[in-house]
Length: 106
Image 1 (cartoon, one colour):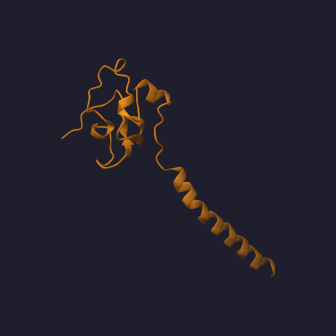
Image 2 (spheres, helix red, strand yellow):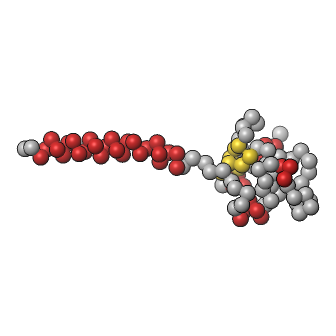
Image 3 (cartoon, one colour):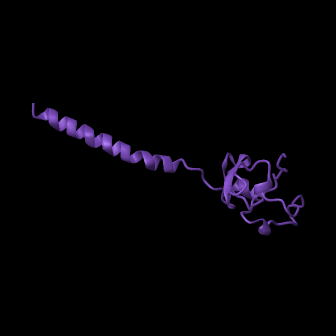
């Protein structure tokens, strides 16, 4: 009979411990930002700052093009970072650019 209260106490501890992990798991699944050093980002010439685009290498770049006005950028107009369809919905800088840029549909 004395073992039963101990089991309930251990179950409570396990339950509370499991509940404490839920926020940490949620944080681990937050969108990652794209790094300029990643192979896909390098191949597309992605830069977090449009001023750093290699215009000699990426001749399709035109002044005024940024991730914020690209069709693949899914963030809001005021967002500094937002999800990009090209990078599997990971975040890119709104002030950035890559060679997959396409004019945002009106």
